[in-house]
Image (cartoon, rainbow, N blue to C red; front, side):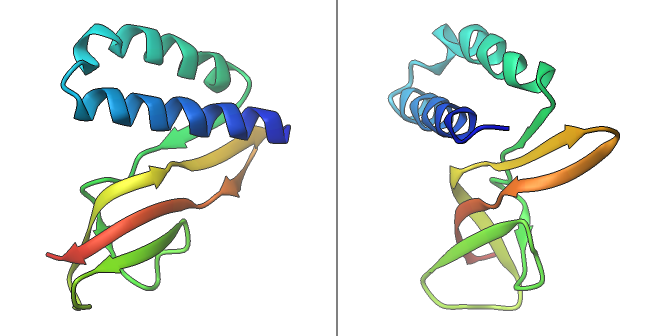
Length: 104
């Protein structure tokens, strides 16, 4: 695993998000899928937790809370994805997601 791989993955993820926000995502989805599959072939597992529940016990995310805290929180935006690396039959967390959460 290299730092450059993580940097490229994060930049691709951010570009995909920005293009989707502009409403042009459909035209680029195939290209992003192909690029992300290159990293998956190298053993990287990428997860976008947007829309999932969030609690303080969740260890794969670093969260910033939008508004007030609550027992029921939801991830509303992912700035960086969760990245795992599979090597020699084991899976290791190499990057926590950076997310925004709000009251559900």
